[in-house]
Image (cartoon, rainbow, N blue to C red; front, side):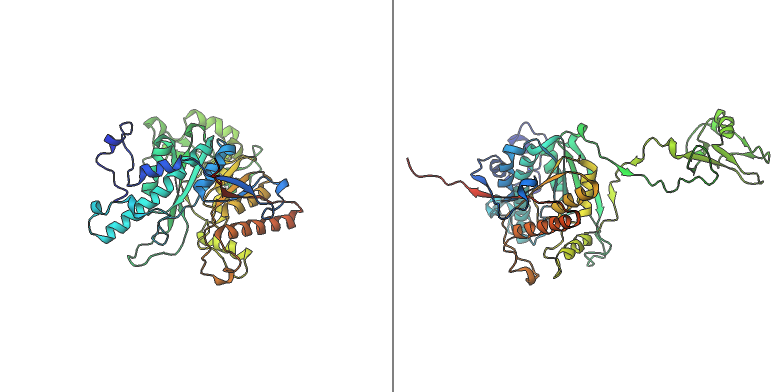
Length: 442
């Protein structure tokens, strides 16, 4: 099978002690670094306010596009977000032939052959693109890849090899649906993943999320400002931290709950009683409040949780429907809220974001809307091939000949909406990749 490690992997690559191997890997690596036989052509008629904007939509096979971008964008991309094919079995074999997998080695099991061919083709499609993408990233750049449980493990092994396991940041478990997508086994898969890899992990830091400060109030007009009740006990400690605290109003002694300890030393009691941080009740049987002041917070930010809830795939479809009255002309577009979260966490106001599986253009819209909301100037580069448009929604069959047509149309509509709202001249440059003609003249 394509995803299995060969027994002779260490013999073939003596410098690698562990690597994902599949039939066709060496050919895929060769393709990654083969000469690019294309050039970029600027399409003025397909652009929108091109002179005023740096945003780019490149119509090209994405491997060709990555090679073309290398000349001017090597080391300049802060965030790469991609939503590649998930290898569901519905997609084609991505242009790779059966010769990547030897049928003799697979035997006569047709299901085994089909699975191995699909695995090898998917890996051979992804591998060269990941190799070239890494070169475009800044020293503090991050790659974020959406994927589901079909290929998440193979993808991680591949990215460990390309980026180094030490540059694996983590995985975001994205709870993206509320209803089951497969009831045959009575087991509901309600999540996908986003894998994060850094070019150099030591240079990366997420922005973090705003803490919920709504519980901080000041009902007693404390001059130190808003506060909330804090737990005065801790789960661990020594016997010296199980001392009695006397209520100055009732004379009652209060001990920490059984099995717990006070979270502060005895010396703090008198200090905090005098300052008002420790607030005693004047009724018998009641303990005390320990105030946690807002001004005592070291940061108003908290870390981004590895489990993401509150953003559903269905939101992406609703966003497209808001732009296209006849219905969403693309299946399962990513919600822009997901991409905006990544931009907010990882990008500065002038950074570049790259998506070379642009599809319907969710990443481009996320950048445009994020800039409008955050008064920022993040720039996008989206790459989409002229893949024939084959949407089930026939209302758009005549309008879009290729997926790139849809990508361009959606970005144009978003720009025009924002321009109408703000009076700006938001737009993008449209490039195409054209094969370089080789002259036969001597």
